[in-house]
Length: 170
Image (cartoon, rainbow, N blue to C red):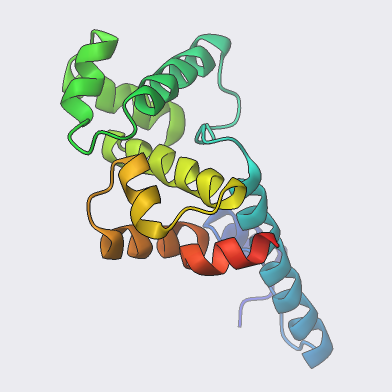
């Protein structure tokens, strides 16, 4: 049980959400857990309600913001085409695949494949929230061929199935 302030700081810097020192009270531990869970839930809900532009790293400059918007707009333009991929995105932006990968990774911490998938899923969430489409219809609209794969991706991204998400909006 490390209890020095340096250890506390080191733990937080290495990615810990909280650092509880011994001896601790059960009430403090339970409150800390509850707060962390509520924060995660708020983050997830905030993420779902934002437009389908993936969030960028803090401190991003105006040119990079414009690049993300242009890229997102391109993906949305081709969103119902399952074959729209990284090569086509790079070509549309006048970049090589490797340059696009470096740029997206630098700006958003995502790979190009993950970025495209995230835009598709956020658009799907928007369609589900604002309309009464079936899962198969939403899949077609966002360019994901397999409904079962779509449900798996959706659950991984938003922590609930598309049906649960649709039911929650009401």
